[in-house]
Image 1: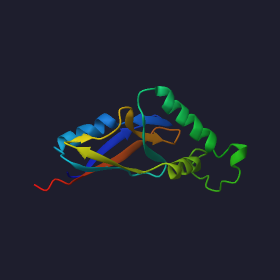
Image 2: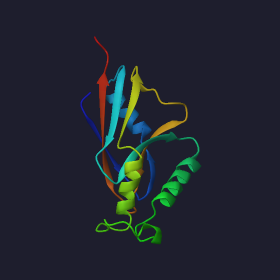
Image 3: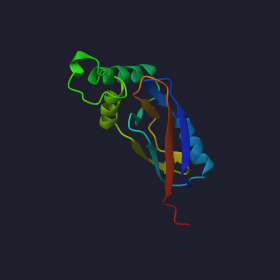
Length: 144
């Protein structure tokens, strides 16, 4: 599979499911068996595999990470030095460092082997809208 690029428009902080878009990229590539790598090319957002059945899960995750790393203008964050890109920027980098910028997903017969309630999410950590670029690469283990 050649690299596939997915552009995701965000509206601010939150989780944006992209499972179907990644599945469509695999289908387009006529993927067989192998490993899919999904990589986000940014330092203030991340990728997650998370439950996609109950929307409260994504809301609770967003709330948890906000409590863990509030904006840099919060009194608890006085220690932050990097402030040149706004009060949401350094906390976004912290959140990204605690999560992942790439995922590896096994694929069988062109289907991602995700669990029943698992979905792939872009986790936007910045307040304002962004266009995020995600790269998908499928490595086949088919020997024929």
